[in-house]
Figure (cartoon, rainbow, N blue to C red):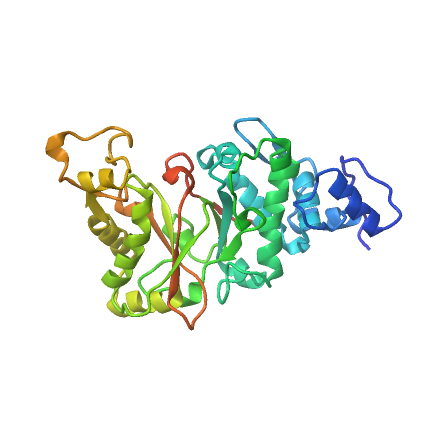
Length: 357
């Protein structure tokens, strides 16, 4: 039995685990589901798994100045049901979501209801059995469910952003606000594609997390298209309702669709370039959809009458498209994951994962 590390948090004496669970419900420390009561021993084991001291600061939320220490993160990881070996992923995710460009405060208090999506790449994804295949966004995998849940509990309990306290203003929200953690299906990447983390600057073979402020995914079936162009035209149809000016958007491409990109020898840059050049409407068409026209200028700036037929792309640039391969075989179902505030006020962030191994 491990000797517990000296912790700074207050302890609560209870007669049973059930009593502890009810106390956590009553104090508002739960996401609405039962939690695993954290003990000094379980928190110590979790900290040691990532070689962390309790007082180490993992991140500071830039707007309110909320400090996330390793101890508080570990407590919430245990509460979420995480295994100790998940802790390095949680640490990297906390680093990422507290980066100023991610704008965690804006995401969590907005009426738009975005959730924190965590995408894991590299060897650690398989080591921890993070699902990237069949029903990747669904239930059934402990790592997916508990890692994403741990980040939500940290946001709630350490930073104090809860719907019942008035800070979380989401009009609707979506289930990803409970938990949203997946791995990219690297085994099914087209030959010309790097994994997401490498595309975003990580070293080949390095494990990393990428965090996205995502609205609920728009899934669609495209069962007849067998060329990259036709598949991307189907994606474009799901981009138009957002209007022009989208700075970052995740394209969740299923393996069946990815195979057509592989067969055609397309790389990721071609994906973004095609959508940038072809997912376009004239300014007058955007106006007819009651959407503001203009991408390089402010979104609400009106174009002159002479510019009404100017074709304007949904995307700000080819780099605005962020393709990932995810999901299982047996169905040509892909999805678009819209960003909070069109990606203009929250940037996708990638952070390397440090492990003891």
